[in-house]
Length: 178
Image (cartoon, rainbow, N blue to C red; front, side):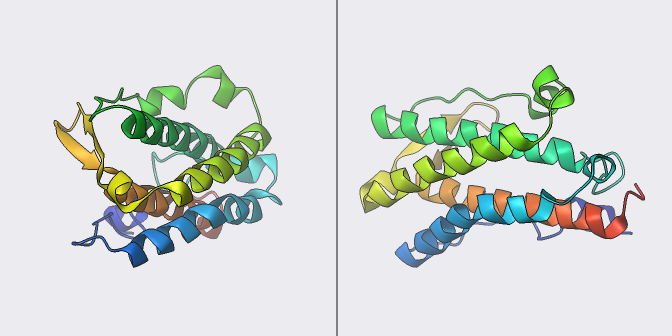
């Protein structure tokens, strides 16, 4: 099995240039549907199946669901900071370390599914309220030492949700063989 394909089953994110209104509209639709698609993928899984990994040394389905809640919460806050401040420097977080905290290791996925649903409702309402110039605003990501515009980040998080849905489907396909 190709390790890179297992890690990036839908490929890596590459933003289109230029980013057009049609791209934003498509990404908004993906973000709106993500909570429902995630719920559909995991709702019938047993405790054992939630512990299946999508690749060797990869996260379990359980961890992926919690990661999506953590990651998308951070993204939403970054959007709000960017819309209310002048090119803020965002605070990175250690996603692998967050996946080992007690709220992940000692709880089911239902709370994260609820967070994702509510968060995406608010995030999509925010995105729909934004004008063209709002999407051009950017933040500084200190780990990468560069700025990211909100139009690019909108695409990134539409990709991110699809990326992790593919991981979950992959874990189910391989039935815990990793």
